[in-house]
Length: 403
Image 1 (cartoon, rainbow, N blue to C red):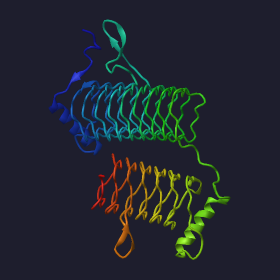
Image 2 (tube, rainbow, N blue to C red; image 1 turned 90 degrees about the horizontal axis):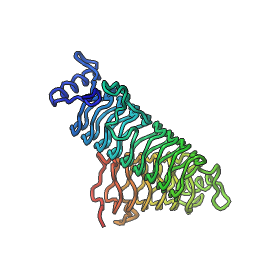
Image 3 (tube, rainbow, N blue to C red; image 1 turned 135 degrees about the vertical axis):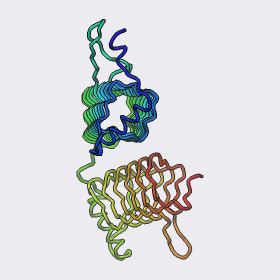
Image 4 (spheres, rainbow, N blue to C red; image 1 turned 90 degrees about the vertical axis):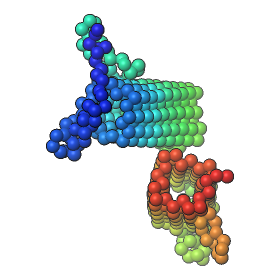
């Protein structure tokens, strides 16, 4: 029998436990520590959820169908690894070497793959009978076909020439990713952030890029035949005018209106305005602002006062709204993917006597948003998407989640 056929070694659970314990000591710089060497181990179907294997050597490992949710594999070597159909939700694979690895059908929802290397690569081995042979146990080197990477962080990832047929990148962060020559045929990139990504020579035929962020993305040398590019977000204009007035003046007038209880300035009632050129609205008083269908993508809104504001259908993806006052605001159908709402006030706004207006987030997209320590008493969340949102210590007393 050939050397290649005998390459993979089986590990019994006890040996694996000893290896993991030694690696734990290694990471903690304790006596008896040893870096885990699981190269070419057959760990198919093993459950390794939450384990810490940072910096481990898993070259050519077989982990098909394994449970790896929440595993830490930062800087790990996974060259030529078989990761097909694995559960790697929320796994940390940042800076990992995944060249030639097969992730076909893997679930990487919410995983961190920032600056990892997903380029093609193959392991060549000496075979006693046939000389050098390639290790093809993964069925496809550098393959991401049919994998789920919804909400994953792939910023700066090396994906040159990668194959990602029908892969789900919904709301993924691909900013600065290297996608030159990648095969993304029929991939789902709805809402994905491709800011500054290199797509030269990439094949995006039939891909869906609805609401994708395409700032500084050049499709000149990419194939986009049949791709859905509806409602994509491009670079902001240098200057925005509202009825012949520069946007900063409109904002300043509304701030003055709020500060003076309506005695000075003027209340702003706008729609479909791109607020990005102002860069920050930090701690501004903008109560009652009417700005449906507007773009606030990536803005600094920390501590902003937006009580009773109408922000329906607004693009608030990635905004910093820490400690913002959003009591009584209308955020129906708003896009709040990855928004930072820590400590925000989302409860009812009292308008006199026993009357109040509730904050309305009906049908809002809050995937991967951070709502920790927010106060959201009686908030309306009918049909809102809170997938992978952080809601620890968020006060949702009396929240309305169903129609």
